[in-house]
Image (cartoon, rainbow, N blue to C red; front, side, top):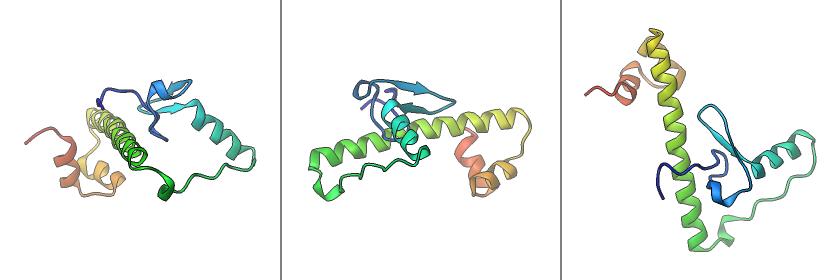
Length: 114
């Protein structure tokens, strides 16, 4: 699957697999996840998720690919925040601390410098 495919940041479904896909700042949420959130917020019983053991190899592969693609969206959103913070002169030490990594690790991961 292409990294440019829009997908729900929560369940990983692509735009064509859901009725609506709502964009937020660096994330997307589908109508199905919104409905699930509404159930949680209203204390209604939640549907149980099917066990992974009951899924076919193809279903597990598709799930894995969706989850992996969602990681790219999240990484892009984090990168955007890092760039904005750096443009405001926020130090690599503060960025690293917020991410739970060292200053050096934050710089290596997000600076774009070699």
